[in-house]
Image 1 (cartoon, rainbow, N blue to C red):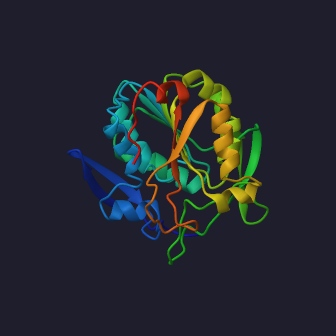
Image 2 (cartoon, rainbow, N blue to C red):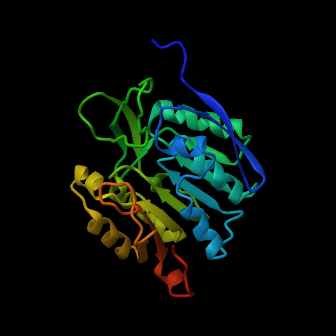
Length: 259
């Protein structure tokens, strides 16, 4: 048994708001941006600015919340009259998420240690070495594995009956289509903007590909576009993995800026 976690507290300032985080410093993904005092995936916030979208007073759903950086940012954007519902299936990272919500004094965030998909029950989730001294990506964790795992509750987003949703963010390492299938009623009722990671090599782990995810969003009545088209990224595909999906009725009502 380890006696302590390797956690650091830092300050990150944006929009004149000080934000403090408890971090695993060896996480080389989301944590690395915080340590550099920058935002992870800043284009999702710039999209709101460029299109003059005010989400204050609404609800946001963060699926695959990790250490909570995106949750904290959206909690400030929705304000006291809005809520953020954050889902993180990794038990240890869920504790970290809750700590960062508490550390930032946010009482408009609701955290859930569950995996979301298209069924109800339990599912295995990979358990990495959180004390590895080398670089680790705690976001690159998968459900449905057969070795080195814990069990976590599995639910459909539809089972939570969340209303007044302006944004759903989904980043679940290839399990995105299953999440969408279990969120159909919520999506059709709320018609939120959806931020979704679509990563071909991750999707293949679950027998899916980019087209199957985009086609499902099309079936739900969404226009889908990749962020940062034409820009090289350090990914397997060399592309940005993040997409924005806009309801057709909203997309057709105005001109959109998607960078």
